Image (spheres, rainbow, N blue to C red):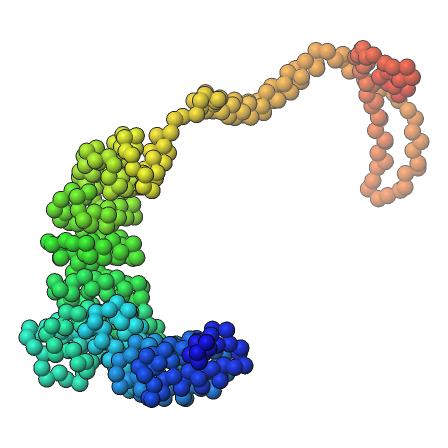
Length: 500
């Protein structure tokens, strides 16, 4: 096993206490007296060690690692740029300390990516620029894009406000350089959360609009716009209406990127916030062919379905009815098309009382279609829910309602008549009682009550005591009751109180 093979193995399974020694061996591989191959391997091993080493070890060797930035900035090295990336991720302060050197490395990799058009080089250049993004760097990037988009001939006399790239004045590299810079702008917006970083939304949107109107950079400009929507999120809402209006103005020549971006904005911000519901009929009438024949048919179906379901209540009913009629006709002719199935499901889920649901058409399509997509299952489920049969007559609803109503009425009438019945029954009892009762017999008994001698008072006379009258109770009525042994009847009890 050679020395390099042992070093590779140590970087994989080395002990933590030996990390500093392994760094020393890797640094020897990147010396100036080594071959380019050894240097490339050395930078790769250094990148691995930077990822796995402990913070203490990294702090001990960070100065020696940063000194290698000058070696990498002399000429482009892919392995060296990977090493710079790992150092900036683990120790961002190294980028601040060696800012000019790191920025020169970024310019070198942008030139290399422009010449090779390698996706790996482009991705690494975008990530390195994002790690070192600042207000100044972002302004220079936007100025460079403006120069590339507005220049008609060869670019000369470039000012210092743009990126000093060697490929900037080469006409043959203009398109590839513009695409790479748009990709760098899209990635950089993902790192725009750094404290103190200010992003000029109006300037960025202006540059993106210029890229959209340019046929050569149209696709990458749309990609940058989608990335901007994801990274800036709700801070872009104040300008989303302007962006949508710009995109709708491009519907004269619709393509995949345009419809994909409109559908993406609709999903991200919603049809109401993005104001796409206002352009619903314009988008539908701008289609040159039936949806199933379009290259971007899936994006169109996704866009229109989202608008129908989420903003159907604010769209004019006649517009929805016209679109629904066209979709139903196309669906009957092409029942296996997933685009029409998706839009039919959206119309079934539409919550607008002025637009009738196409239930009969949807059931016919659901029974005839052989599509296995998720939209077909959703359409079938919506049809079953909307047209499910009634439950068998376990309880007749009409009869049950009538019974409840009658029961409530009878209860109310009984509650109202009850006081009158009680009053009538009391009156009847009062009328019956005099007939049954015998006339009262009043016996007057004179008793001699001793009266004390009255005191002599001035101007007073003695008053004799009044005579008392006793009422004799009427004879009780004969009530027959069955008595048990040892029980007394009512008559026996009354006889005990007989005073005669």
